[in-house]
Length: 286
Image 1 (cartoon, helix red, strand yellow):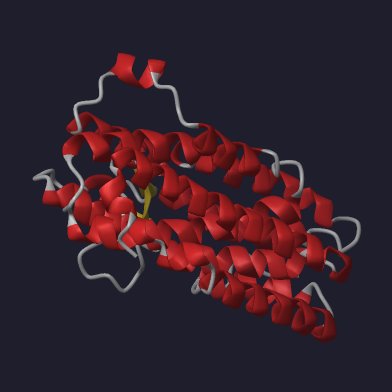
Image 2: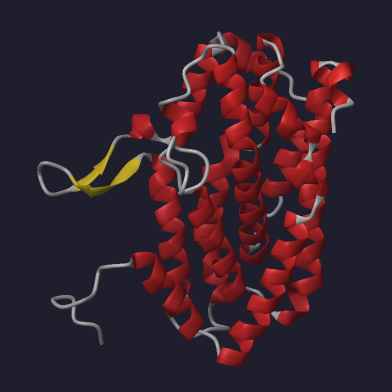
């Protein structure tokens, strides 16, 4: 039994990963990790990782109306539901038991919580009263809503917005995975990869229009080694792949590969549509 009086509370991510590894045999972990590593290689080579939208956004050539629409579409496709998916994964980790030992679900929930804490507006450290630091106004969803404010999107505009079919398809694909711990964890990992790929270009394109990007939503999205942001999406993506490594079984490999790549395919179509709506001349850039 761990003594609460002397428990090591340092390096929480590493401790959670070690606990997940310990829940499987070394052979099971190695087999699952090899599958996940290969899947990550396939995703990194997928056309979405070199989509023309990345270069176009980085060059800041899209006008205000195009970027306004892209943000409304992106909001519908992923921003509004991202924490819903994280919380679905939290709940569905119960599917690990009884296949694994009692309480095996807690290490994955622990890692998911680190992601959730960032998403909900908590910060590392203690406040002036020795309690957790955080503010719901710093949660990522309302920070994105503030970006829409900067783009001049009214509350009525948001309420009456009609997303494209592909934006709804991207959203529904993740929502349909909420009932499966393995599926939702895999798709969340892919979604984090999309955030890593497209948040910095979206930030540059927004900044090119004279809107502030040195604080708020774009300050907390990207990778941990970006000196211009306070972001950890790469850490959270790694955590989700570790979660999948613990959760998956060999008979699920083909299914998880299929849905992960299908989700990437949907994101390609999403960005194709955004460029088409922004103007046909820009879609030819590759």
